[in-house]
Length: 42
Image (cartoon, rainbow, N blue to C red; front, side, top):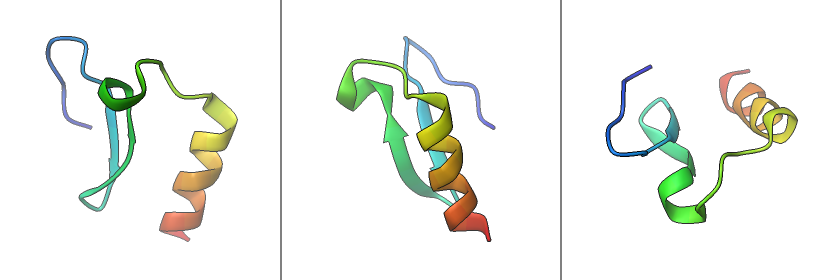
């Protein structure tokens, strides 16, 4: 995890951006985000 600034909330897995609050304007839903992360790391 890397701290962001200015309200930026990005989620990256192995350097790949999988979610950006800056792009969507809202925080992600927890369960779908966790499932997406699990797919990428398993």
